[in-house]
Image 1 (cartoon, rainbow, N blue to C red):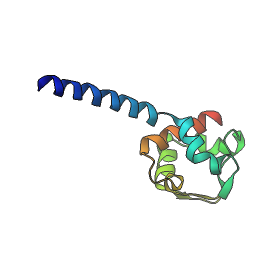
Image 2 (image 1 turned 180 degrees about the horizontal axis):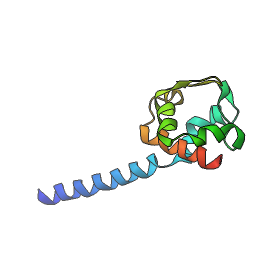
Image 3 (image 1 turned 45 degrees about the horizontal axis):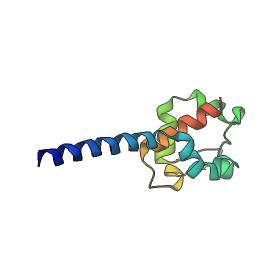
Length: 106
């Protein structure tokens, strides 16, 4: 019975590592969820790669960007729905996507 428990622990550890790797895939999350708006500028969203549109956002602290992306935000330029309308995304996936978009837009 102990070997079964040890095998289960090893399997769970591997699954946790895989989940963490997936959560850290900002480009993948962007491609799957965020690009539908941020590639085209829908609802005032800044296009990824548009340095001018992102300059003010990039100057804010990262926690503010994360908060707006996770909880949603309505500003003068447009609306950001909570998690971009993808409630199934984890907060870590959203943070990784924000990091990706910021890096591509500096």
